Length: 157
Image: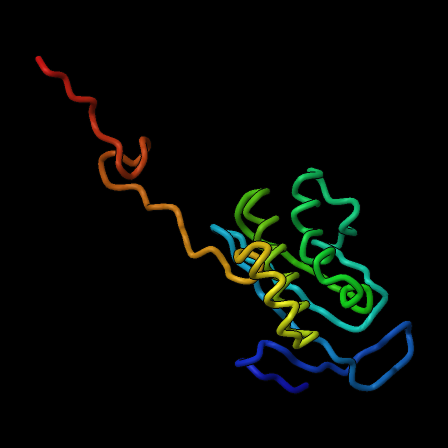
């Protein structure tokens, strides 16, 4: 097995439909949002997209599914020639959805090596390619249940 940490892609030897096929080209892309981390493994295929082993068409809630479908719709025919398996850990429902969305679009750009697709994603929504760096502020001592910036309400008299 060959690994290359800089490009975040690797080749594997494996089975395809129960038959040994030799090297199968796969690449890994990552997307993050809040505490959620998504890893998308893209390989040659028929256009199936799975998120945590669930087909993308069955993902609930519907709005989350629609946001994850955006990079696939924008990619057009390039997305129908590959299979994408996304595994998402951590965070909440929306953080996981946005992390998966970023991972899918990064995987498609990495796979196609198409600058035009990258420009389409950037023009549509930059968060498709760039992970959101914002994190929640940690709670401070003596006010840990109220939040990091909570203080007593001041009274004039």
